[in-house]
Image (cartoon, rainbow, N blue to C red; front, side):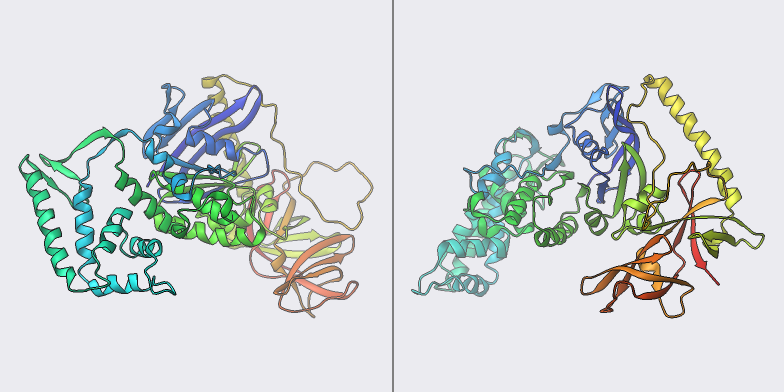
Length: 544
């Protein structure tokens, strides 16, 4: 539906940078989550793309067309960007029915759009339904009350959903009486065919014809004019989006008569009704309980697939980001930290901040010191008394990595200087600094001045699922706490003064104080530089 590109987009108030030179490409039909702590710039980014907030500088394009460009003076209003916005507060009109809430925005549309022959469309849909009159009779017959009469309201809804037709068409179809006499179907078809032929001849008389979507075509071009939606057009749109979000049976209800999840579906339907190129969502699940949030995540996944639209979703809930997104955009202090697929963000975080922010339970950070030998292995000392060897995947050369890192820093500094020259330098009040990662300890040691880290100082990042407990583990510890959840148990293991978090799958029970042994399993242990906090690589760690 829409490809979005942000180039050096900045939003600041004085010296406070909400978004700091953000470069981002959101591919067509992607589901991108903007993730990060409160106040990091997620919602501001969303609002700038939608046109609800004006950037200080930069460029934003949707499908290659600029909707904002500070240098060219372009700033397309929000209502001209063909985007939908779903807020935390669903903002439904309490005095309007579900149908009226969804259709409200459509009633006010007055813009250039194709001209449709809605009568011809209705005739065609009725002819198609009457190809199998016995099926029409069956659908209506399922709506018989205990008194033996037809529940017309229910029957109309079933016909609308069964044949994807408008209320007007459903009323006509019910009025044919096919459910009482199948033989009338033939006469109805003859009448409808004659009416459709007459409509086509009427168009032909003025040099027009109808295409497959019942748009009026003249001289090989679709006829357009500035107009409002016809009543039947609005009805078809409302019925279509209500089917997508499964609220067709609630059309006559008021918001107060709906659950929280149902209200959210109405809000989504209202947002989808104008057929936006992009759907923006600002923490839409935050007001729901835990069970309903889980259900609605599944609904949003299904909705994304069924609409094919580009979704941009703001959340501070990493679980939502991981389960919904095709890509995660992780922001901190207005600065892009990583933009990748969810599993890449989890398994290969760019830096210590990303590793710490993504994952529950949180990653274990372990400081280590050592150097890389001629065989490519890192000889490390960690947890105060353990010697270990780490083999980096892909044979990463640490010294070469540092050289490349320094060169990239110089390049970034040059780009920043050029941006400052072009747009005028304004000192950043919310200055960027190194991430203060947390080492879990039983007791905090006495304060002491720590030397500046060198290229031989590292931080290991070990996900809890890679803390492997076994009888022959190389490291001895004891259970500090154990929290079973049924499918798994989260344990904290004391190793000297250090606390390591592990996840044990299955119904294993542990007692506080119990002696255990552990290793680090797999080849996904992360190696970060203490000097700059960035990921050097991943690999396996052995204590033997």
